[in-house]
Image (cartoon, rainbow, N blue to C red; front, side):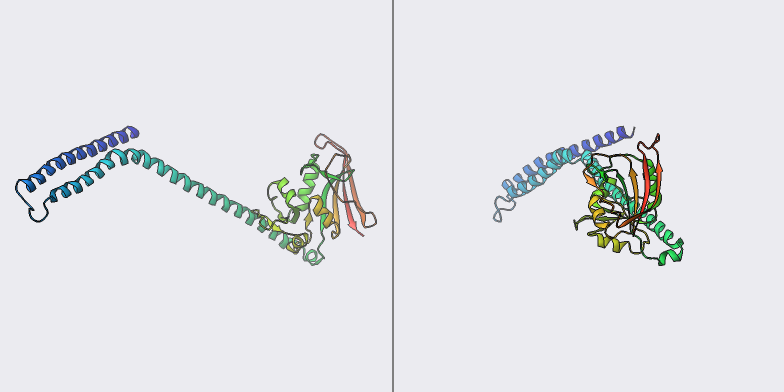
Length: 294
């Protein structure tokens, strides 16, 4: 009913516009004749400007043409339908801006919540732990041949390892290279993600971006136990300064293109080992192994 009413109102308005234009045209014709008679027959203006009525008619015709364009051209291309479409475009544009702002606020809120969680974890830690020297840990899942992954992805799926990774790293800084972060795809909850990249323009919402391993360690200086989670290049640099290795060893050899550095027994001492057999969730035999630097 509302659409029918709008159509009716629009038709009524257009009829009035055309009626006024027709009246204006008739008035223009009659007025032009009157001006001609006034000048040529009654000699009004003679001696001042002989053809003044011509200029008056031309000026009047200019306004009539404007009226005609407004009714038949402007109203056709910029009428109610045009106004509606323009309004819809503006509304859609504003809605996109609002949606973008809302998403930004949600990300900031999530990051703030994660930061508050970490601060709370720091607050409830025993003071004796905070006074100890920072312990840097490399955490990784590797195969018999030290394989880490292929094509920037894991080769295997081991839920037990993922569960251990989550419980171990929650509440801490996790330091990683850009490729490792992009394979994960998002900041992990309840952890502070630190991304190392050579690109000074690289930015990620909810993460700390640095340009070197040294800078990453400095960012995590208030964390008693930050974790380095990959990839291969970062592991190769970090194993020289690490204090501990938390390794999930998958008892199988895989075809890979990235590898964990060799664990030198002259430098590292195995302090614990838990071995598990494959089951319905975990396809391969595996072990959780901890190494401490000698």
